Length: 462
Image (cartoon, rainbow, N blue to C red; front, side, top):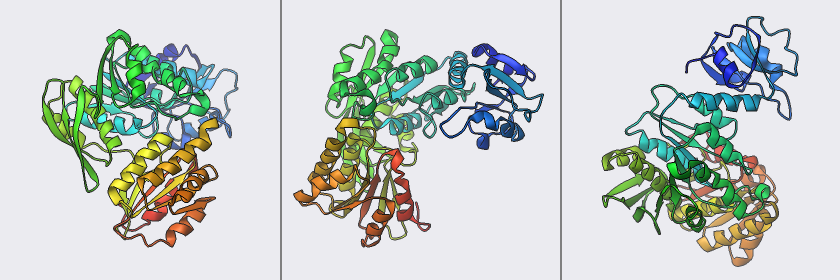
């Protein structure tokens, strides 16, 4: 990154309040505790506190500059030579800066959205492309209106491709992210119930995800899940080039799928009639679908079969996404705690049964942000858990209780727990040896990873 204060001022039409406009910037930070020497600090006003209160702390940690709202008076403890750029709004300024910075680079940008599977698809796509290119990818959960601009600002001359996850919770957000990132290839993994509370209907969710295709227009390339009927409909109004991937319909088509231990192996046929066997780092048909999306992008960008195979096999999945861990007793712990909606829970339950059969426990927390569809969504998960023939269902939270209430009369062994501690008490009494698998999943706000940490313990995590 090579940016000067004057370039930041120009990009966001800011005002120099103090300091040297020729100051060189090494990076950007939004948390004063994570500032590194040479960083530019971006203060945000949150519900609990205001980032402006920490500008002086950021300076003492090595930051060389910061945004500062024009309506606020600078803290007297901020060093007089510290670069301060006055702006009206931190988020707008950050997005304007990232959009201007993106214009410096001529490279393929892959934008990835969908109701579930975005992060795994991002990880697999970056892994595949890394076999040939130097790739910048979204890290952690930096996929929103703040995180994506911060990722863009990490672009450097050595990068040849950028793989960016695009999250959303409201209409118009994908459009904004596209205007910043300017993707040339767009992946939509699926259309599901995530964020239905905010958007109101599946149709509204489909329109919001479709903003990625609206941006691509006739000049871009769409990569769509051919096994999702809603995406088959969306394709009808997209004027650009599109590739479908999937087992039922696909230009890049999955032909065979087998589970060996905790990995998935599958065969793929490509549009040029070539075929190859591939290994997915994660188990389950859903993860293989995400891998097919990644292989599609690799095919579009000219990777050969050997590169595609090598890249996918070496992909590293983000924590909390269908990771299979083992404790000192050998029990398999499926950590899928990052988030949850009905479609992703059903996919995880299927993986659980594929791995452990009847010797399985699903620990499911509340699925949040489902609005008026919440109760029926939890009931449907309970029915599906019974139909999958898992060994036992443990629910955590008042909403998830409905899943147990639905499954118990059908004959599934269930436990309903108000909190983590109650769930842990139940799990402690179970004789979970090396033959057992335990799935832990719930919405982000449920902090279900705490249960994973207990099950793994300090010994034998791997």
